[in-house]
Length: 344
Image (cartoon, rainbow, N blue to C red; front, side):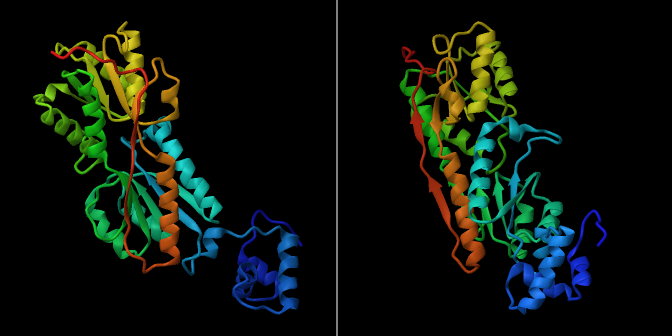
């Protein structure tokens, strides 16, 4: 037989003198085929070096073993998700848990648009894990596809999709109260874009609730919105240092921002925590190795990914299961970046 670049099921069927369906049955083992026919097909497969296309094998049914993962991208062309190890840890746990269960992942850094809905149909995805908050106008269309969906870190208002998250509002309320308890009153809030019903907005609400509870008036001048990145944290440090607000502490909505703040203040000759305190959010491993060590609100990032996979595959195997909305716990990790100061 002559060798070619890539053989298809149709080629194998022609060479073995059987139908395309017979080759598929031999590959999947879903239907009993005579041993003579099975061996003939397997010989051809071995001779031509045929490698089955997992997607093609699943085009006729819900058997692709392929799960879509949607990760947010803050701006066109950005590689930000790879710069923030929050996503590296989350994706790593999703990929590992998925592989252990015999599935594969298709990762997309995109928005939830019509193009992605088309991709779900074209690739016949068995299920989808969606991280973050997106425009709500596509949720109803996504529901019509009847594909199991798990939302991670989303406050999408729906009665259809499973959800896994933390209580972001309460978590940020608690860490802001911690900073206030250390005697700080001029507290800046460093965040990404405050999208409606997004994680950042929920954390901002927690920050404002803590201020209100403790009789501290809120001012928009203490809000520093930017991208969620190391560079943005360093830039925010410069803006804070150049302000006349007398800021003594910063609540950052992500550790990557907080680490950027630490670096930015260091370059400016501003000592943390002696001159300004910084608290982060996420509990990334890097926070153990900063100078000073970063006090942070730790969330179970890997556990989120594992639970999302478990829930999604359970729904794939049991399409009629009830919707699950699970809220995970967080805990404060106290290190050296927040100091106690005298109340004004």
